[in-house]
Length: 140
Image (cartoon, rainbow, N blue to C red; front, side, top):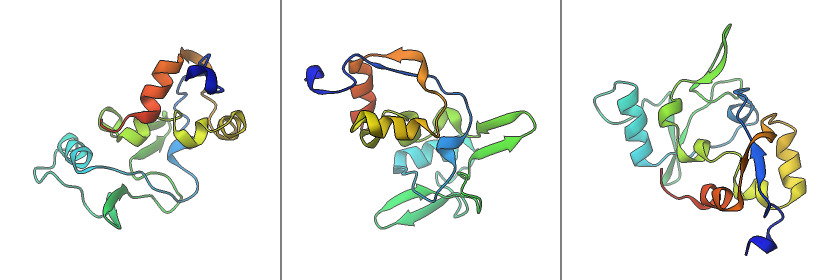
């Protein structure tokens, strides 16, 4: 199977904490009920849920909200830099970036994502198994 994938020899990625993956065009950061409860606990809430300013319902699913400028509601920008205020409990979707199926469809798709993500193609090397584990992971 590894022979069939263009990234069979692995890929490099190290997060630069630029925040680009957490901002930009409107979209969805899907969160399961377990992830919502984990974030809620991390934020010190006792009810196990998030406020509407943090979470929206989309059909039968839930997504974190965005600020008017397109930033994730939990992305913080200040004089010290950029960071995620819920980083230790961020949803699986965030944890598995950039090893998403859409980015791994082709070398062109990977390079297209790399335009906005300076951490791609540099730093730590991930082997095929690590990439596929991240790509196919279903639970936090």
